[in-house]
Length: 350
Image 1 (cartoon, rainbow, N blue to C red):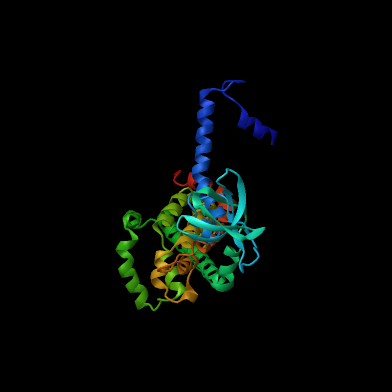
Image 2 (tube, rainbow, N blue to C red; image 1 turned 45 degrees about the vertical axis):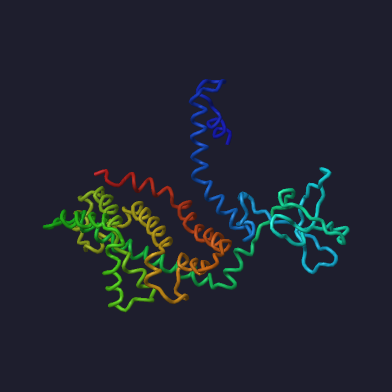
C-alpha cells in the first residue's frame, strides 16, 4: 500500500508541483468522474422516492421531507423552515398550498393558520434510502421470473455461441479449401449490415419455425456472430499447425483435435467472446420485445417496460431494477477482465 501511495503522490518536479502533474491529475479525475459519475448518480437515485426524483434542482443524495403529527390533522404534515417577516426563522408544518402561498401552522400551537410565500421557506429534509424500490418489484411484479428468463437466455446463447463460432473459426483457420477467404470475407461483411435490415426476414423465419413467443426464438437467431468467428479465427491462427499434424499422426480424430487441443489453447479468446456474449444477450431489448408477447416470458430489459405506462412512468422502480440488471455484467467484468486484454492482445499476432 505504501508503494501505491508513493506512486500516486510522486511529482515530476521533485518536491514542487510541475504543470504536467496538475494536468495529469485533472485528466485522471475528470475521466474518473465522466466514467463513474453517471453510475453513482443512478445508484443513489434508485433509492429516491417519486417526490424526490421530481424535485428541481435535483439532489445527489436521496433526501425525504421530514413530517410531524399535528393535533387536529389525520395525516402527518411536512415541516419547513420559514423566514418570518421579522427575519426570524421557525419550523412550521404545511396544511395546504394554494398557488405560491402556503397555509402553515406551528406544530406546538396548531390553532393559528399562518400564510407563507413558498419562496420564504425551505423543506426540512434528511437522507433516507427507499429500499422498497428494490423489494416491491420482486413482490408484486414477478421480477424474479424476468430475472430467470434473462439468465436462461444469456447462458444458453453464450454456450451455443461459443460452440458454433469456435467450430467455424477452427475450419477457417486450420483447413485449406476452395473459397475459404471468400467465406471469411462474407462473414466479416455482415458486420456492416444493421439489425433493422434483417429484422423482417428474421422474424418471418422465426415465425415459420414456430418459435414466436418462445425463449428459443430469442436465443437461436443471435448465436452465430461474425465478431466471434473473426476473433476466434485470428486467435487460432497462432496455434502451431505442427501440433495439429502431430495429433493426426497419433490417430486423433478431427473432433478430438478440436475439443482436446484447439479449445483449451483458445481459452483466453473464448473468455473474451463469452464476456461479449453475456453483455450482448443480457442488454438486448429490441429482439426479445419483437419475439415475446407473453409477460411470463419477458426478459429483464423487456420487463422494465411494464413500469412505463402511457400516462405514468414509475421512475423509482425503473432506476432500482436498472441497477439490479447492471450487477451481473459488472461481476463478469470484475472476475474476467484480465482475459479481455490478454485475449485481444494475442489475437492477430500471426
